[in-house]
View 1 (tube, rainbow, N blue to C red):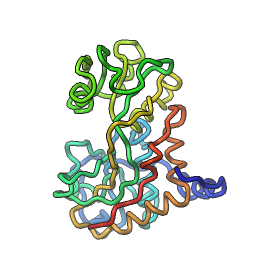
View 2: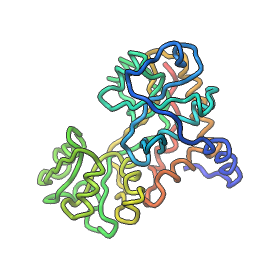
View 3: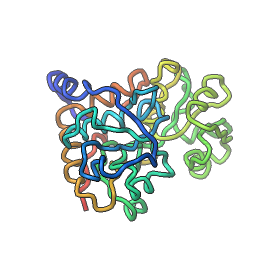
View 4: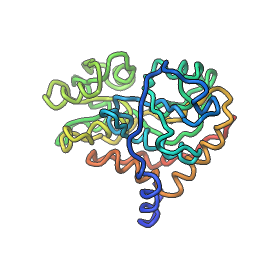
Length: 283
């Protein structure tokens, strides 16, 4: 991780984190002429609404690393806070939302893959996550996926993360599915499961919530590589500008500050070999 002076951090805080909550909406709400894609005055940004530390809706407020990065990039593209409209964009709908013009861009733990690049374009990455484990803060037995033989492991229904561990690392792991990661955290807190698995920064955000503060820790041994990009419509002419904004965010210290603020209390450090990343060239 690059080092920056406190002065730079202070400047970043003044320029970026003065931004606060803004309006939200639902995919499928009226779009068109009043959106950035339509050449109007607002920009519709797809985010998750249920991921603490990344994209979380609390009433009219939206918090998390993804939303903070989105605000920074939108600001560099010329949009003020009141011109941003956040739209819930669940994983299954992301490509469709971009193709239909329901959103102008997406910041939602959106891993860059060759398969997705057939349908949409990506700027970034702006963060490189990795699959990891969340355990109780006093747990010293589980330091990696190989330690899960005979243990109970929680992940959300439909996720392939837990299956990957059973297939690749610990055949005897007992898989437990819950509807969301908050439910997995509850199971971890009660002792019903021994660990929770998904991307490390998602786990860190979960551990950093007020209700979980001090209870859990991220093991810190990521065993996959997930390059989070900014989803854009196919062949978007905004890719270069978004990449320039991401590069500036990293160089002025804002990236480092946003990671720290959104994972505070989780005892989490991003993979320093992969972060902060350098955006790919726009194809």
